[in-house]
Amino acid sequence: MSNKADRSILFPKSRFAWLWENMAGKRGLFVAALIGTVVYNILQLVVPFFSGKLVDLFLSLNESGETLSENAHTFYFFIGMMVGLTLFRVIVVYLTCMAFEHVSQSALFKIRNFLYDKIQRQDMKFYSTYRTGDLMTRVTGDLDAVRHNIAWVIRSIVESFTLFGAAAVYFLVMDWKLALAILVISPLIFVIIFRFRKTVAPKHALLREKLAGMNTYAQENISGNRVVKAFAREDYEIAKFDGANNDYAQTNINTQYTWLKFYPYVESIANLMPIVLLVIGGVFIINGDLSMGEYVSFSGLIWAIANPMRQMGNIMNEFQRFNAASAKVMEIYYSEPEIVDAPDAISHPGRFDGSIEFDHVSFQYEDGNLPVLKDVSFKARPGETIAIIGETGCGKTSLIQMIPRFYEPTSGHVLVDGVDVSRYKLEDLRKNIGLATQDVLLYSDTIEGNIAYGVSHLTAQEVVKFARYSAAEEFILKMPEGYDTIVGERGVGLSGGQKQRISLARALAIEPSILILDDTTSAVDMETEKHIQHSLRDLDFKCTKIIIAQRISTTKFADKILVLKDGRIIEEGSHEELVAKGGYYRDLVELQLGESVEALKGSVNIAD
Ligand code: DGT
Ligand code: MG
Image 1 (cartoon, helix red, strand yellow):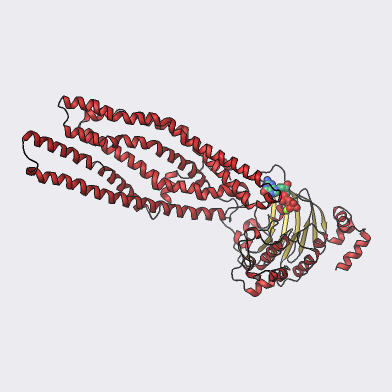
Image 2 (spheres, rainbow, N blue to C red):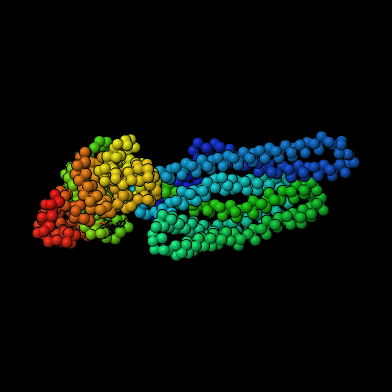
C-alpha cells in the first residue's frame, strides 16, 4: 500500500462523482431540487419585472389622460401575477430547501455507515497509522462539511449563477447597451475570487489539521486521565489544551479574515453597479433611450447582479472547507486494508487441529527501521503448550501477531495445520484463535456480555464455566450485580488482574483451536495463576496454547519453551532441558526463585 501522503491524491473518483455515487436513491430528488433552485431564482425577477410594467402603465396613463379605473384589469393582472408568483416561489424555495436537506442527510448517513464499516475492517497497520481523534474528526466534523456542501454550497452556486444569468439576460433583452455597461465590471470579481481561492485553500487545509490535532489531544487526555491524575498534571494538561484550542481559534480567525482582505474590492465593485446604472441610465432617460419603467426594473434588479458576486466569497470559503474535509473523508473511504482474503482463499469453516509452524520467519514493521523477528522457526503440535519468554521489547507480541495474520512476515511463512495462514479466509482463521492481548480492553457492557463477546449464543452456565477456568468467578460473585455488573470503558472499576481474567475467559469462551495469551497472568497473584495453569491443562476442548510470560512459574509446565532475544530464538526446550543446559533461561530461574539450581530441581518436583 502507498503511504499516507500518497493516499490522499489517489482517489479513484473526483469529489463530485463521489458525492453523486453516495446520493444513489436520492439523485432524482437532488436534480429536482437543483431545477427548483433555478426556477425560484428566475422567479425572483418577476416582481421587479411587473413593478416596471406598472410604472410604465401609470406614466402612460398620465400622458394619454386615461384613468386607472379604465385599466383596472391590467392593474389587477400585474398585481395578481406578482402576488401569485411570489407565493409560488416561496413554496418552491421551501420544497427545495427540504429536498437539499433530505438528500444531504441521506448521503451523510450513507457515507458515515460506509466509513465505520471501512474502519472496522482495517488491519493493524491502519490503527497504528491513524490516531483515534483524527479518525473521529473525519467521521464527525469533516463529514458535516461534506453534508454542508450538498445542502448549502452546491445550492448557493446554482442560485448565484442562475440569478446572475437570468438578470443578465433580462437586462440585455431590455437594453443591451445599458446592460453591457453594468456587466462589463463583473469579470473583475472572478479575478478577485480566483486569487482569494488560492490564498484561502491552504488555510482551510491547515485549519482542518488543527481541529484534528485538538480533537486527538482531547481524546487522548480524556481516555488517559488516570495518568494525568496520577502525576497531578491537570494544570499542565489544561494549559496545553488551552494552547491547542487557542491555536485552532487563531487559525480559524486567520482563515475567516482572509475574506476580509478581499471583501472591500468585491464590495466596491458590487456597489459600483448602481452608480453606473444611475449615471448611464440617467443619460439614457434624458436622451429618451430608456423608459422610466425600464429604469425602475433595472434598478429593482441590480441586486440580482451584485448579490451573487458578493456571495462568491462566502461560497468559495465554504467550498474550500469542503475540499479540505472531503479529502480526509475520501482517504478513509477509499483506503483498503492490505491484509485481506486471497482471491482463491481456502474456506475452512470448522475447527482447526491447531498445529502451528513458524518457518524461517523474519519481520520488520513498515515504519520501523530494524528487524523485530529474525529467522524464527519452531513447531507446535496440536494440543501442545508453547511458552515464550524473553526480555521486554524482544519481539514476543510481534511474533504471536503473525498467527492470526495481524501482520505478515517480511520473509518466511507461518503455517497453521500445515497451510500458510495467508491462504485461509481471515474469518475462518481468526474464529479459531482465542487471543488475550497484552493491554486488556473491556467493552462498556456487563461482565457476562464481555465474556460472551466472541460467541453471542453462549449460555449463562457456559459463561460461568469459562469464568471458573480463568479463576474469575470468585471476584465476579463479590461484585454488586455479579455477572450483570457493568464494567466501564477500559474496565474501569476492575483491578488489572481482574481485567486480565475476564479477558482470558473471553478468549476461552470461543473454545479456540489455538489459544494465545500475551502476558495474561502478569497481574494476578501466584495462587490464582496456579489455578489458571491447572484449568488450562484440563480444558474440555483440545487447544494449542501459546503463552507469553515473564514468570518461570507460568513457563515451567509448557511442552516447549522458546527464549527470545532481540527477535531471535536463542534457547528452545522443556523447562528441565533448559535448566540443565545452563544459559539465559537458567539464569532467569535462579534470579526469580532466588535459589541454586540444585534446590530448584527439588522445587520443580514439588510444584508438579
Ligand atoms: P513486551 O511486551 O514489553 O515484553 O515486549 P515484546 O517482546 O512483546 O515486544 P514487541 O513485539 O511488542 O516489540 C518488539 C519491537 O518492535 C520493539 O522494539 C517495539 C517494536 N514495535 C512494536 N510494535 C510496533 C509497531 O506497531 N510499529 C513499530 N514500528 N514498531 C513496533
Ligand atoms: Mg508484548
